[in-house]
Length: 136
Image 1 (tube, rainbow, N blue to C red):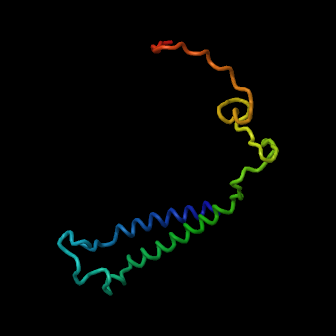
Image 2: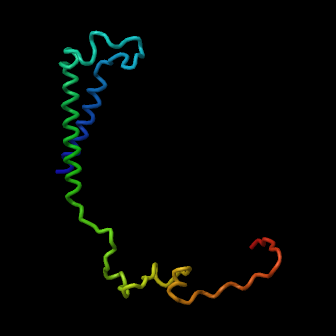
Image 3: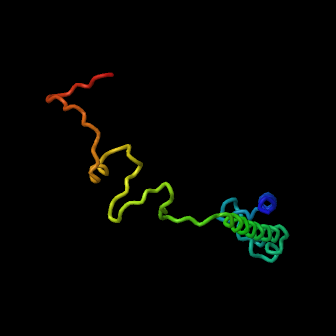
């Protein structure tokens, strides 16, 4: 069903592009090109009754309808998700008020210090005085 509507949608897009390109230029909507405001303007009876203008409006309406149908069909297969992380089989259950560990036992830093976990052994103390960069 969705593939058929996509094909119809693409045909409408191509037809809409072709109809818009076939239309006669208004000739100076901003005063460029030496024309504008003459008897053959956009809102005249001849301009609104033009077949290409009506075809453009019909194709544009069908384009919007197929776009809406495609967006509705795309939403049918979605399952609702929660922004709150549910406690599944992989999430450990912790006591109320405690902070669960992030990322397992590896890593360290402030979170491990707050939880009272032992840290990795510290690096040997650096000698006092100015340090010279060494290449390895």
